[in-house]
Length: 76
Image (tube, rainbow, N blue to C red; front, side):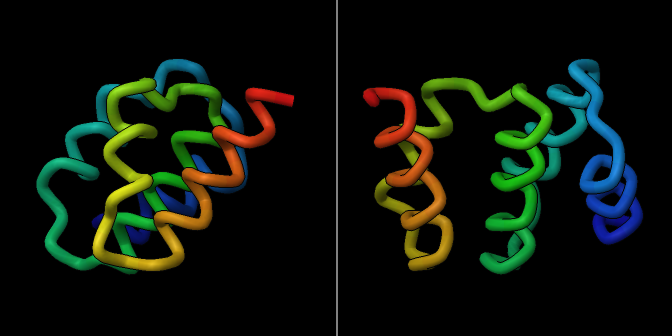
């Protein structure tokens, strides 16, 4: 199911997908999947600041890199 959701929101932008992506972010156990959810949240402009801050300390290095890049772009 998560693959289908990521496929949909990876190919199409929607500012109404925040709730579903946040639900999966909070409930998925796979760190790689969570990283892909973070990318989808950023690409769809639905990333909550609190989650972005949390991602900077994620156990998965790719998620940390994505969050740090996003924060750096925001500050530029």
